[in-house]
Image 1 (cartoon, rainbow, N blue to C red):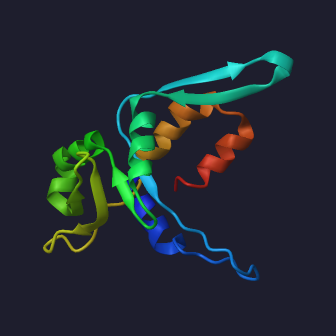
Image 2: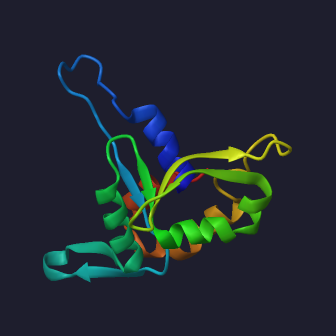
Length: 151
């Protein structure tokens, strides 16, 4: 998720749509980490919505509020998980700075000098997770939209 956000910031921050004057897209992002609860709510009139809640959503909200244009802020929990992940330790270096709020302003994820390149963004298990855990809770059009983001 962090690499995806950094790529979006690189490509789309300060984006001006062609043919549209005086419009510039400015992005700021936040990421949280932890356990989520997901629900399908509704039923009245046959209308159902997919809903997620939990600490990661609160963390994401706080991180996003702290980020300014062009920045990605990750929650303290997210930073701790990234720093303790063995694959990341062996292959990557996080660049950024710890903020007074104990959140982390992430500016880049770079390969370690002797590794040459970063590991793939989506591991093969990512597609299985989408099929097994997420797809059963989504209406078919939503699954197809999410599928676009998972190779």
